[in-house]
Image 1 (cartoon, protein in one colour):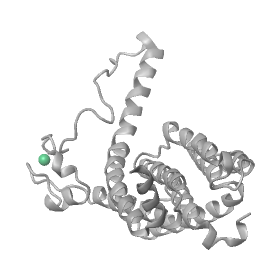
Image 2 (cartoon, protein in one colour):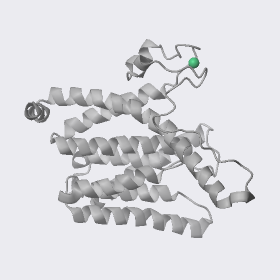
Image 3 (cartoon, helix red, strand yellow):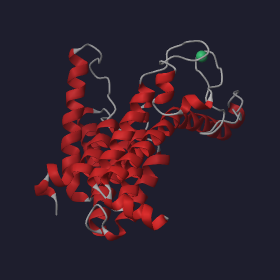
Image 4 (cartoon, protein in one colour):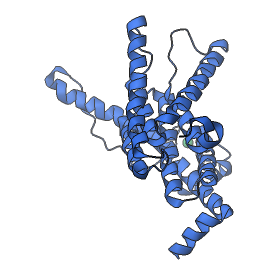
Length: 290
Ligand SMILES: [Zn+2]
C-alpha cells in the first residue's frame, strides 16, 4: 500500500499535484490560525514574564487564561458565535458562506481564502519542481514556515524566534547530505553569512544615521534561508527581496499610504525571495548554482 502510494507520488504528476493541492489548502487554513494566534500567545507570554520580573513594582495581574493554537475554538470576531466545523473546509467553506458570518453576516476577510489558495498553489509548485518524497516534504515545511513568518511580520513587525530558529536548524538537518544546498558546508556557511550580512548592514546603517533599519528577526530569517539554500543563493535572495521591498515602499509612498521615516517590514520580501529561490533557482539564476 505505502509502496504503491510512494510509486504513484514519484511517477504520476497528476496524483502528486492533486494530493499536494489538497494538503496545501488544508495547511493554508491552519496557517491562518497560526498567523492570528501566535503573536497573541507571544504577547501574553512576554507580558507575564515582565510581571514576574517586576513583581510588586507592577500593579497589573498576570493573564493566566488559557489561549493556544487549539483553544478557544474558532469563533466569529463580530458576534463571538462558534464557527461550525464545515465552514473550516478551505475555500469551499468561504464560498458557501459567501464571505459572511453564518450568524451575524459580518464580512469575513478575503485574506483567509487567499492564504489557503496561495499555500495550495505553492505546494503544487513544489510538487512540480521536486518529485522525491523527502525533498517535497522538506520544501513544504519551508514554504509553510515562510508563509507564516511573512504574514506575521506584515501584521505585527515580528519575526518570532519560535519560527525562525527551528527553520534554521531544520535547514541544516535537511542539508546533512545537501538536499537543497549541494553540501552541508554550503548550508553552514549560508547560515553564518546570512546572519552576519544583515547584522553588519544594520550596524553600518545605525552608526551612519542613528536609526534602526531592520530588526534582529530579519538576521535570523536570512540565516535560516542561508541554511536551506546555501550561501551561493543568498545573493539572489537579497537581490530579489531588496528590489521587491523598494518597489513596495515606492508604491506605498506615491499612493500616500506611507509617510517618510515610517518602516515597512522586510520579512515578507525575504520570505518571498526565499520561496522563489528554492523553487526556481536552477532556472532563474543558473550562474549562481554551484
Ligand atoms: Zn458573526
